[in-house]
Image (cartoon, rainbow, N blue to C red; front, side, top):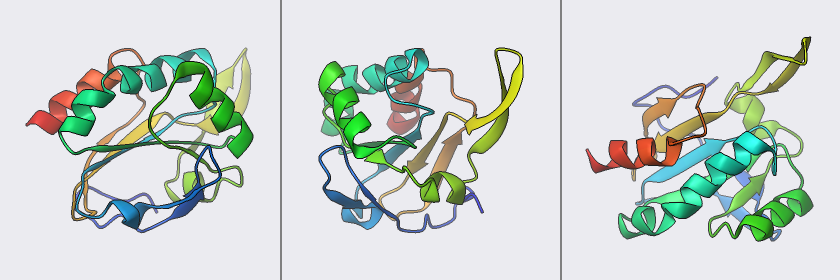
Amino acid sequence: MQPQVGELVENFTLPDQDGNIVNLTDFSGKPVVLFFYPRADTPGCTIEACGFRDHFAKLQKAGVVVLGISRDTVKAQKKFAEKYDLQYPLLADADQAIVNRFELVKPKTMYGKLVSGVERTTFVIGPDQKLLHVFHKVKPEGHAEEVLALLKK
């Protein structure tokens, strides 16, 4: 079941773009921006990921950890990270375990056909690993700024 605001976000383990194992609990004591995106190196996902890249220094200065997650493979995440010089971990959830745990696979219409895909969603997790905020159906343009504004409050 998708975590609700105020609830503890259950730990998970995934490989990053370099094959390193990352646990959510590795970042205890720091706020975490966990953004789920449909697919590496697609137009909307690139806009969103590059937005976080462009604001990464401000987020890092504020002590915020940024993690991107998609159903892509480690290899695809690495290619995406290198192509766009993304300085934060991109986690590979190729078997959809975490995407499914967060209930983010939703029906979508693509080219007139009904398909299922990952709904672009961002979770802001507090230093105590409790969920602070959820951005549903994220629009890629300006999203990093929106997250930064929330964190400044």
